[in-house]
Amino acid sequence: MRGIDRPVFITGFMGTGKSTVGRELARLLGVPFLDTDRAVEMRSRMSVDQIFRVHGEARFRQMEAQVVREACGLRGCVVALGGGSLLDRRIRDQVASSGRLVCLEVPLEELRRRLAGSPRPPMAGVSLEELMDRRRESYAGAELSLDGGDRSPADLAREVADRLGLQPIPTVPPERLRFDALGLEVVILGGAAEDLWGPVAELSELGEAFVVGDLLTGPMFASGVACRGVSLVPRGEGSKELSVAEGLYDAFCEAGLRRSSWVVMVGGGTVGDVGAFAGSTYLRGLRLVQCPTTLLSQVDSALGGKCGVNRPQGKNLVGTFAFPSLMVCHVGVLMSLSWDHFRQGLGEMAKYALMDREFRGWLRVAAGDLRRRDPVALAMGVRRCVEIKARVVERDPFERLGVREVLNLGHTMGHGIEAASGFRVGHGDAVAAGLMVDLALSVRLGLSDPLEIEELKGLLGSLGLPVVPCGEWGELEGYVLRDKKAVDGGIRMVLPGRCGPEVRVVSVEELRRAFMEVVRG
Image 1 (cartoon, rainbow, N blue to C red):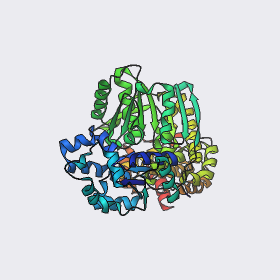
Image 2: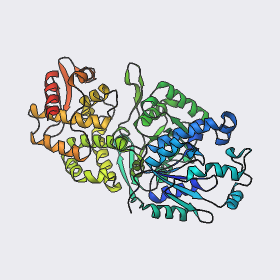
Image 3: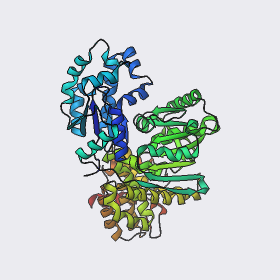
């Protein structure tokens, strides 16, 4: 038996119970669940039946294929497919190569009984037998086929887990942290994905909550939640636009939000940014809840209170400081992240390790467990990072005293690496390489012991992070000089020190030499 490290796709003819069994399997294993039909409906704001009637089956299949392709990029999760989604051989091959396929089968007469009185869109003008014959080949490649005619969804879910050799992820009991200076409670937990909503429901009636998610996190975590409404924003930096915030204002107005309402952000850093910006400026400020679903946002961005949108002239030029009342970090939802996305959070963890020696020692020991996504290690790592950052933010919530500047450790060089790569290099990878340059510069200035360079290199390697910046200095220099920390005569850098991070103004030449030293090894 082992944990789930690839998506489990549930297929089968309509009426076989794919969604119900898939949801039970996800609950049993403690991983997120995605229903592709529901995702299409939430994205289009139309039912499947309406899409068929208004746009036709071809358009529905295009929308469905896009959702399935995105699901193939996930890791530990359960995905219920539409009954006809595998008719496209390219989609069928992609599902087979990225996950494990389970087919549910139900005898024809039982299907007739289940479908009686509820005609499905693909059946218009086609007999049940004919439609089943058309789809039979698309189900033939399943790794596991089960007869679900007279069995409960829970029984079928247990058999799928047993036959595929999948064991449930251990539950992590809720742990609560309180930061009174910020008016913030942080809850860290693990278990079934729907447990995410328990702390939110304790705070307020879910009927007063409006959920903002992205095109995947919304359907994965907010489908079926009895709230005032759900609005989906684009994935990635494309969501941090004033036009997206305006769309949220319209959705808030349509849902009838009041000053007593809550806006709940469910997603990564960009969802948290644009959702909190819209929520903090609508009706002069609604109450906020952050439910970060990436490791990067759990250990860093969701806590800082910064939110905003980009403008053509630069990132985050329009924004506010708006601290949530509640932050829910569910480590179970991290199982669905691809390795590339998950690793970016490890880069920020490494930053905190250079800020806190005790945490550095723990991280060195726990690196393997974190890479394996052990939920207990993840919960502890998230907790320690939250505590380290909160200690800084509490002393300077609105960034007026310069105290929060130490949180930029690794970021001046990291931002340059990101920008020079056209943002093909992830944030955490760039920060990790930036930490190596910062430490090399710190050693050159006598602020750190030379032995720490090999120690940091070993730590980053154990976390699967890069230890050498990509790109040439000539490609990076312009981006570094345009950074907001550039000053006349040099660059204001946060560098590791023997007693914690120190702020120094260094020359461009000093930074270049440190960069070249790291590149040459």
